[in-house]
Length: 92
Image (cartoon, rainbow, N blue to C red; front, side):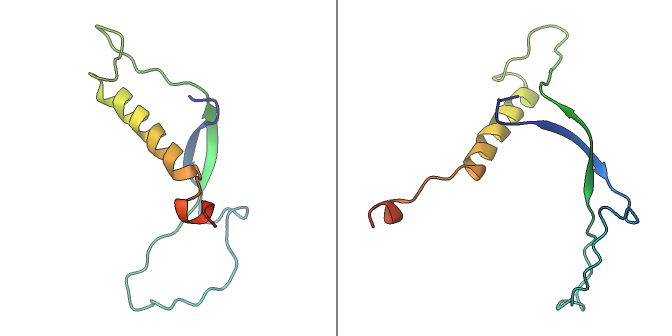
């Protein structure tokens, strides 16, 4: 895993868990629409490395879809969570 990332294993928290229960009263403006089930997750474990097993050869990003998807996901996550000022704000 890249240094600035951490791996987590999560599972759905029970709805009756007092730590995750939201007791705020919220007015539903879309009460006519089908309600969306909302829940929370709890961390069950963490990891700092991943291994993709290949029985015949070393996993290669150009040939292995799992390795390639992880590399592409990390690139996308980096773009989503990074900030670079736009040209409009730097010229002001």
